[in-house]
Image 1 (cartoon, rainbow, N blue to C red):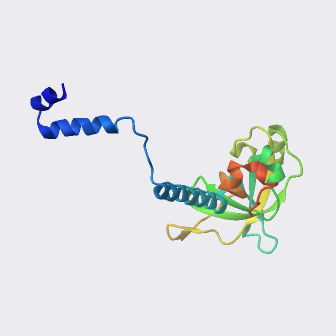
Image 2: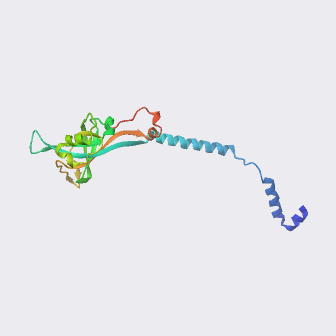
Image 3: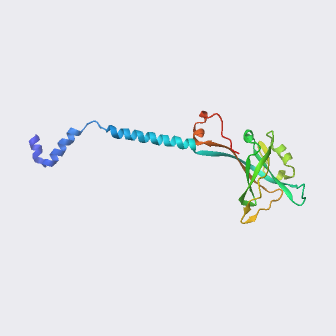
Length: 202
């Protein structure tokens, strides 16, 4: 049978067929050297990911409607003194405190951002009706809804320029105020139970 099989096919084809039969079913053998190198590469990549997660940070922000309030300056009545009143979500009240920075974008100056420093945070979270009373004449200038924590702030410095010209503020101008509550690492966000508290940022 084997002799007849050898005559029907070329000698090279027969040798290849027989070699394939011997190799069929062999156990796959991996070099320990390559396996160790692959393991160390995996460990290094995992360590790099953990380091990035521990060092990289993400800022947490809260935002709410804001209005410009003008008052007569005690020294020069011709120069109004402006402040910012912002309506922040009531849930953010535990994280609000004086000294934090408000970034305010006004409807008339969308490309400019005003920086204000928080002077006062209302001690209680209030509802829309009480918030409107607190706003007084400005109550109809901003949307009021839900639980609210009122924040009052003064301008940090001169109003930033927009298009090369100084911004001109007017009492009653409305916009949006944004405040950074905290800065946390990616690792703290992925496994918050490893961390007791948050890193606050002003």
